[in-house]
Amino acid sequence: MEEIKCYNCGKVLCANEVTREHIPAKALFEGYGIEHKVNIITVPACLHCNNEYSYIDEEFRNLLGTIAKRSVNNTLTCKSVKSVLRRKEGWNRLVFGNSRTVDGIVFKEKDIEDFHKKNFKGLFYHQYSKPFPDDFVLIVNIDENDYSSATKSIISYLKGFFEWKFSGHKDIFQYCIQPVRENIRQRNKEDKSDLELLDSDNLIACAMIYNQEHAALVYGIRRNYWDIIFDEHSSKDL
Image (tube, rainbow, N blue to C red):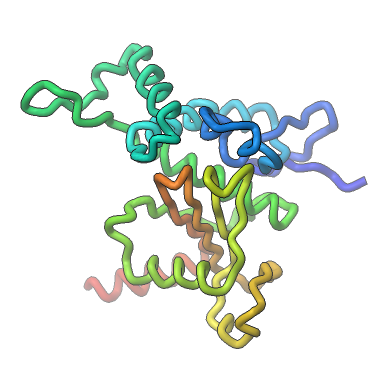
């Protein structure tokens, strides 16, 4: 019998230890009909890892509700405001304008990045049936208004050569996770199938779109490859 591992920490789980982590969090489906909640991706998790992300799941839902512009996400917005204000520190997180109107809510960037990293690991497990390797570094890019040329190039790579998938419904969560390879242009342009993961792959990219309101790009970079890139950039700065 094949052993079951936690998607996040890699711990081998007995049958009675397995919980299910939803990718993305169920909170992002609030306000949507049952047709949006079919076949949501779940991955095995230990109880500790499942509970560890409960807070940041809610935080991301709150962020999404705060920035939402589409009327279909009004339920998320209402729940987000109530969630923030019912906390002891909630009022201190509000940003007020000159007329004392609320202009925004402060969120910790690390919490949002951790949410995207969790989803990256979950999607990796779902696609490759194993936890994400420890010898990789995860980098999150969430500033859509300041994408570098490299970031834009990888997004074009994912959009141009692969089929995008979704969890539950494409209006809630679309994604594409693939190894990044230079020789991809050599294959048939009509072939949008997933690449098999190779031991030689040093870079894995995952683009995610949430509720048609927010997008993120997460890179998994092998540590020795990351060290080479870092050293090259450092030497250029000298």
